[in-house]
Image (cartoon, rainbow, N blue to C red; front, side, top):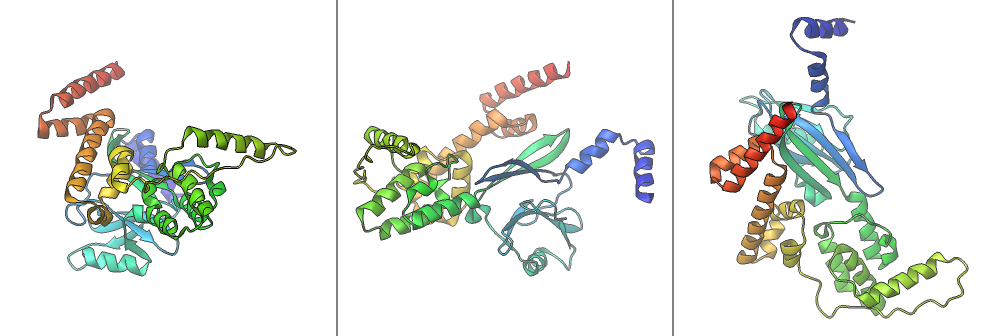
Length: 333
């Protein structure tokens, strides 16, 4: 009862409207945007005012719990560290004291005792994006997390058993970076032509090979036969289409086909610098820079566009800023 009265006094005498009160209950709350059999998309808005840098200027860090498989994000408001569990949104945030005696390493030890370790989400089957957004007028970080672990497990099972049928009907695309080392290991172990053919079909689903018109025709015929329960037609004998070339290497995939977030995650890993030459790495960084600019021009807020224009004085940003201002003026009328 006391809490209800306190809320009413805050609303009536504190100059706070009911809409504003409801807004604060929406922040820092994880929502499931999409859930399918193989992926789950989480989204949450965190208020970004009054946050202190945690380490080397970074205002957020990701942590992973090995036993529970949870991914969490850490912020540093004044006087404490707060860890928000994203994959289990009902769990209250973990609050850790922060002062002169309890700093960065003290926080790491405290989270380690709770099972959380500093981690790159992409190493554990997550695609993460963090962007600056205004949520109903409040400056926030919008955090999007896509959990691919079920889809990864499904692909690993198909690869391990050399059975492409396990993933034939799956339409959700799996980023190749999640499965690369696993796929290449079993490709090296494959001995028979049938095993290689099965991995070839899985590679087609991953975007490593192109499906020939002959192969497409054979696949359509096989699907038609399998869908007929009492079919008397003999199965079409398929000649395995095995490319004489090696799978398209990782560099060319990230240079031509990878999405913005795939490329972002790949360049942030140590694998990128060890697997690529100096020129290849810089070429991918240039492509990422162009994609980042395109994304900013297309989706960036007015605040982000103005900040970018102050740095580069690019006329494209000025044009976009003016167009965005006209849109805002039109919406206010």
